[in-house]
Length: 531
Image (cartoon, rainbow, N blue to C red; front, side, top):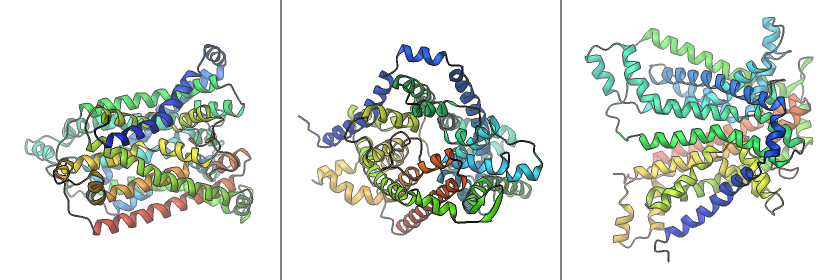
């Protein structure tokens, strides 16, 4: 007999994760066979794509994390103004698909690129160079946000003590800052590497003949290859994500909680601030140039031969179902936003506000999606749900996007629940107040700001994702982001640019709306009950 009624909810959530995460992955791994391995190993392109992926991902990770660390320090350790504006611009690449960055770079530095002609270059940046540049554009904002958040919580006390003892700035950096950032840097490095190694958007747009594993996987899928070969590709792409997941778990087990005694307030430094301004402005220009260049394609007649203004690309996009696919995207994103937030909220409540082995097991299942790249998740759904009533419907797109983006919103609310006084439920039980009532009257009002962030995160990412849904959508359920692939295959760059512009505008509107809502909620913040 189940004594605690919350266990019913835990069982229901566990079934959800087993069906939507564990079983599809098991199906993928179960399809691997020796014959498929032998066939792939005999193909020179297979080992070449592995080497290419490792090379491009390693270089992209080094550049991306280095830039993120530099920009994070510029904003956290200087007195420059317009920090919020810089932060917004630097994170704009998060609002459009990765393939759009590749196309933006192609317009600037391709064979007929604007900068290629202006600088008198003989050839474009196709291949490894282009993939690294595009991957840095795509992954840099994530690394930047993660490191900025960590630096904002650093305590000033050790630095003040070091200054009193006469320890110079370089020794302070190596002895205080780097040890403080070490565990976070490991997580950032693995997160960025996983993002880049599983991305096919940038290599598709500007990779040329430099083929990576995700591109090879898509080619195998388009050739209706046997599921055994597809599963092998999926298993290989899963390895770096699993490694990152395990290291993240170990890091959390070793971490110790603490309190910030004093926030760091940068001292006056004119030269330092001028250098920080220069770094931020240059990086903002680098971020904006490909986005602006790509957006300009949507109103150019035929780049680079005819640069006159036109609305043909807009009309062609609508004629090919752009309006219908946009509605599909809005419906799926809205459903993922509401359903994903509800499931993540209830799941975090069970794992953070109740104890026991069941709660710990549910927590582990909840963060498992961190270790599954979108491409692998979409492939697993294709193999597992093929032939079912769910396959080929909008519902399966909702489920795959919910799982794909589940871990981050879940951890947001999980951390918020851990801050709030753990004795609330015990006091409620003494006063005969039910858990649902405590949830409704106390916990939801206390965490409504986090709820808004969760809704925004699910919506924006579902709006622009390609990898997780590329295997699952059909002509009736296609999302607008998938049109970019179609237009790219037919060299309709103007139409692809217009689709990216639509996604960017929609996501900017949504982010702005949720920002205003969150600001309004802060003005009416309820009385804190945290310990």
